[in-house]
Image (tube, rainbow over all chains, first blue to last red; front, side):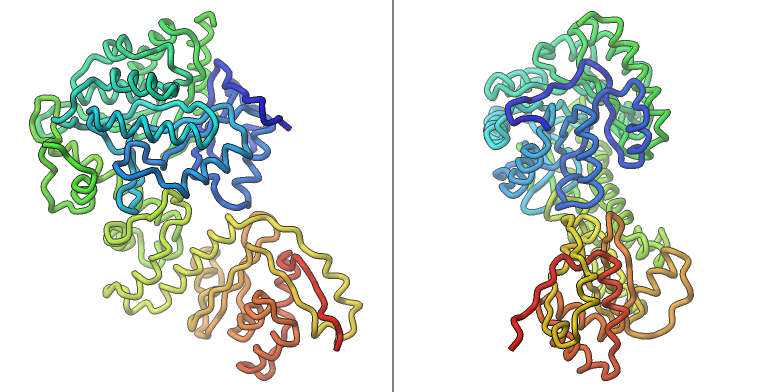
Length: 284
Length: 252
């Protein structure tokens, strides 16, 4: 077992968002997949199969714990019970990484089960930074904050998302999780240049990269409206943007996310192989 | 111009409400359909969570009707916690008051059973006690024995044959016959096991779980079923690994 002081880090290699249906295949031969990411909220039961599987997996793979329910951007104080559950999970699992989202999902005792957008203002900055301070203190470790997929903007926003994220990281000491698909989705939806976004992003703070699939729609004016679905293969323009970003910042732990209509393991392994190929072209 | 989260949330759950002013597209126009993406994400993801959690309710109603019911439910009872695996504890009560399903009197109890299945699935692990010691025990000592039951043990009492209805729909079991059943769930390892008990069998297990002795539990069961036979319930507990501690009262 790991001792309390050893905090493993994620390898500069492909990982996969873990789904229980792939348990046996992953243990038999994980192919190019070197680490796994779990959604924290799926492992907060008292026992049973999910916890038992996770205990097996953590013996074999570095694990990244990805929270999807803390509502870091919420106007209300962080949910103390949920914070305690996260702390319990991180304490026993001692994962290689912990990450959460720049978003909100709870309001007045209702959890909306989606990552909802925030206005980029000084007030939001102060609130999010306070929440991250509180979280990092509770977990006793640095967290990574993920850039969101957005479908609309707030007229009240005062700064760019990249500046907002940089400022949050400077104030709190948190690292950043760069979701390349989210960059592509948000920039398309916000009529911004994804390459410009990456150029403005504080790449030196990136501890992990996400790659996933999206759906294409149009808004009522005929403008493209991309929906972050995590239900399809990564599209070529996102792979290109990923390769360019990796070339610019060096290799990073890179996750394939596929959460809806989850395919058979070989499909995921092939996506991971593609990431491995791109990572191999860049010296660490 | 500032859009608060209360206003955002209210508009998410009420499609008739205007999109809040101050949410815009890249040209500065009102967000329109872009806001509907969030409305759709929230409602569809919660409806999907319910469908996953209540597969037999969905089968009994059909996917279309279940979708309509779920749409009403998620707007009236959004989750109170991010633990989506436990979402829907308010569904049985909601079904009791939802006019279009009043003819299906067993639905609320089936929903209670599906909730109990998830509680059993996620309950803490436990180690069964060695029940072979009981075989050698004289009856007078057995009657004063008390048992601790595993955290995964669940009971759902009903006026309907809920275990049979669940099996008929989830496992192609035989056609249910009208009678009252108490569903007992045990979890030998990771998968909950369903046993149909008579109402007296349910009372018996409930009494044991509350710390009453075997004799007291038998008395409670016999009060509603004079010919009560403990063996179906007791063997389900033993084979389900549901007894974690055996203790004896000091003999008088």
